[in-house]
Image 1 (cartoon, one colour):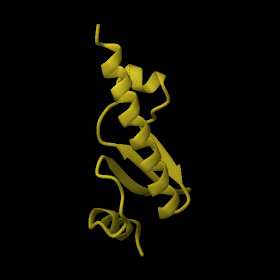
Image 2 (cartoon, rainbow, N blue to C red):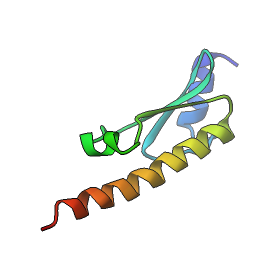
Image 3 (tube, one colour):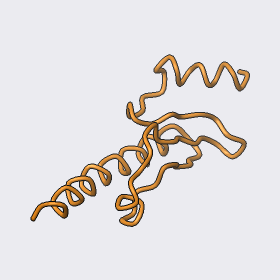
Image 4 (cartoon, rainbow, N blue to C red):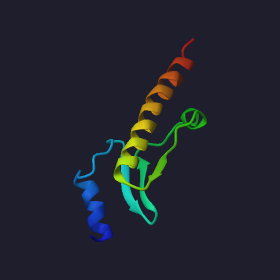
Length: 83
């Protein structure tokens, strides 16, 4: 399978990922990048914009973990802004 065909597999939804991540094949396996930029507060508190994995299962798990972390950090950021 060519690299472009493999990328199309992601685009076609053959590999389930979170909707806010853009997956692609890399030289060392797989990489996924967030569609949205992170705030400085989110970056400071552990959110990352890119994850790397060796297979689809690992990639999905890393994306899921980062998505869950972002949800909680975003809530903390919201609470921080309240008087």
